[in-house]
Amino acid sequence: MRLATELEVDLVEISPNADPPVCKLMDYGKFIYQQKKRDKELKAKSTQITVKEIRFGPQTDEHDYEFKRKNAEKFLKEGSKLKAFVFFKGRSIIYKEQGQILLLRLAQDLEEFGKVEAMPVLEGKRMIMFIAPKKKGK
Image (cartoon, rainbow, N blue to C red; front, side, top):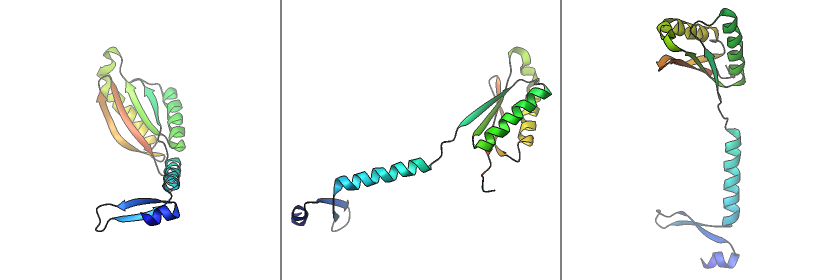
């Protein structure tokens, strides 16, 4: 403590549980600043994953399907996750099989751009499927 006051620096306890406790002489304000700077750099390097949605009906036409497939392809190339779902209105819930076939066909068409994270699951009036982009290194 005497040495810290002589050098006009702070005495920082590094490991309080050690025997004897480990301390370090340093400028505490500078240490905190560098730690925040390091944390900020790590945060900047991490990527934010966005989730894009594509909505189909159980009787989606071929042209509409192709248009939405191209958009899904673009989203996966950008690195976004894809949430594809078939929305059933009213009594169209009787076409569950058609909705599942549509989503599986989409998964098969986008196989080279992404991999299926979750197979089609019916949740209320929606059948949802998630596709994650493939890594760029592969």
